[in-house]
Amino acid sequence: MKKILLINPPGISLGYNVGLCYLTAVLKKNGFEVKIIDFLNQPGHENKSLLQAKDYDVIGISIKTLVMDEAIKIAQKVRKINDKAKIICGGVHISLDGINFMKENEVFDFGFVNDSEESLVDFMKGKPLKNIGGIIYRKNGKIFLNPRRIPKLELDTLPYPDFNSFDIPLKIIRNYPLVTSRGCPYSCIYCTVQAVSKKWRARPAESLVAELKKVRHMIKEFHIVDDNFTLSINRVKEFCRMLIKEKLNLRWSCPNGIRADILDEELVKLMKNSGCYLVNLGIESLDEEVFDRIKKGEKLSDIKRAIKLIKKEGIVVIGNFIIGLPGSTYKIDMASVKKAKKLGLDVSLWYPLSIYPTTEVYNEYIHDRNIRLLTDWKKGFKYNFTRNPTLTFEKGNYRKEEIIKMFFTANLKSKSYGILIDPKKPLLSRAIDLLFIILRYDPINVFNHIFHAFRILLKFRKVY
Image 1 (spheres, rainbow, N blue to C red):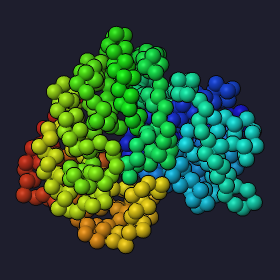
Image 2 (image 1 turned 180 degrees about the vertical axis):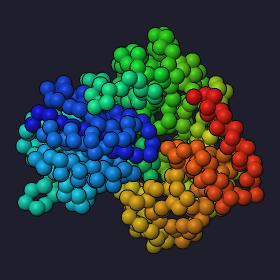
Image 3 (image 1 turned 45 degrees about the vertical axis):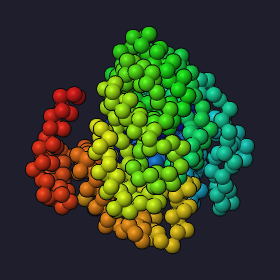
Image 4 (image 1 turned 180 degrees about the horizontal axis):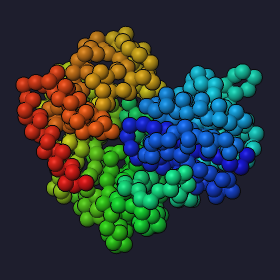
């Protein structure tokens, strides 16, 4: 096997799949021919683009839970085009529920869990399946998962991600995804990171700046895609100092979030001076008891202090909250909405709790008699951009209707309209959807919402 085609399925949130670009770089380094088809950021002509699959020995499809159905459809089309190729899958969903996925979808021949660079190279070289860590395969009608591989490679020994192998060449990457570390040692009860990579591994600042200098000609800004960017505060400070010294003049952001308890005044100043303009904080709940139950390893006082530090430097700060956490009720979550308004956040985003396998909250909820599971966990993520959200569960003291009402009400009260409407729809369709939601959940303030929505639209167009 010498040629491999990698496919990124269509989805909702735009952004380049840097994981596929790392796989491409490693495979090329080992002598394989690789191409990427990206249906997420470059949609259209799907059937025509997939005809390329007839020329490849292996076709790999990246799978996240939210785009799983689309990924399966693509695999079925690929099988009809090339019935001799090996169809493989990887991604977060496979790391969470790979065995069940392979049982339910025979169109896939192999699956890969966790960091797959080394395992995929072994597979392409023809190494015996039993000796490849973290691979899922079929044998005698049964599904087997080999013990997960402990990565041998340090991140700075990996080649830079390859963005030059797309079937439609990229001229510019508006918001370049920069991986500075992988993994997270903390144990938040709702988080899947531990199932993918609990061990935290980081790249040195020199490597990061060298990568940015290499792609400077084709990017306008970059965003950090780490699960725990600031775990080593000295490393981040060094990175910021090097950005300033090299005068790259790139804006950057941390949309995946940073830990509040690690920040200090010096770090925030360095982030600002090196080009950082936006950060996310995972706040989840402003109720002390609920917050303590989720095991973030920090305190609400840390978050409040961090917000003041960030705002002082003029960096936009977004707070992420979760509706329906253990111990919460409609009344408790509504109190958090009111408290959030006093924090000085630029944006507050409210999401219903998603329960993933391998997480502590999943194990707690599936065994709790007060929890009623409403649907398969894989279908519980369709609450964005729809008037009728699909929820995974309801609690005895927090019914489905209340959770849905809280989702819309909290985001309306926070003026977070973007989470409620589909950015891919035409402007008129988005306006109609938003008006419908306002009239249903906060009709008394309809004119106030229209005024704010219009202001946000003007601000967005002025900035971008």
